[in-house]
Image 1 (cartoon, rainbow, N blue to C red):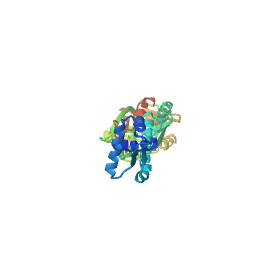
Image 2: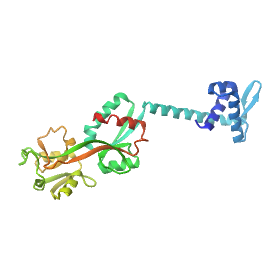
Image 3: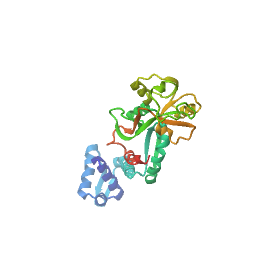
Image 4: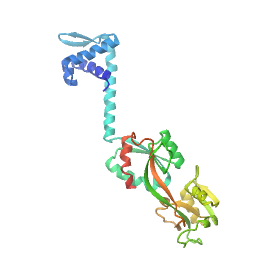
Length: 288
């Protein structure tokens, strides 16, 4: 505890009990130690706080004016310590999470369900965005952690979660619906529905790597819109497997002729100095 705060507490308790001796017993100091701390305050402030007498101590007029301020400081410190203790025991707290839609839909409910069994009083704030938005929110301190594609910004700490396979999705009556693996070159033969928002998506990066220029018929960041359009026969797409769970639509998903994946993880600014609730949250990621 700050030494000045100890002096304020010595002053407050001496007034409350009317005695250096009783204040010393309560605060676990010697009587001379309590007297010295109050004397130090009087020297620092250049005023007399207490009148000493055989019958005990009593406030001076200056001391009477300053006592409420010292009491407030001690009270606020006690409340601060109480809040710190609560957070240490995770009896309260807030976790601010960023996520792309499929992680928010398929992972977060399972993780939070298990986490809340042990820490029922933790609250959550969820921001939905794309990889770039989530990276920026973490870097700016807008959120505590975020699910995204890795590698990410070099200044962020990351926890690898899993590889998510990228699959070609097409209508059940598509000519290649029965193929074992979708040919890479055939991606250019049909209207393509691209899931992309800011920057290059996983799929656009694949096209660059393979030297393919597909006929992009529609671009959106809404994965369910892409699924509905594929279902209607408006084109084909490549989507991560996580989005396709469960696949309860009249469409089929095929692996690529050359298997492709995205690496997913959780990122935060500083894992070592993260809030305690966030550190505990990391222990529950396996429940996804």
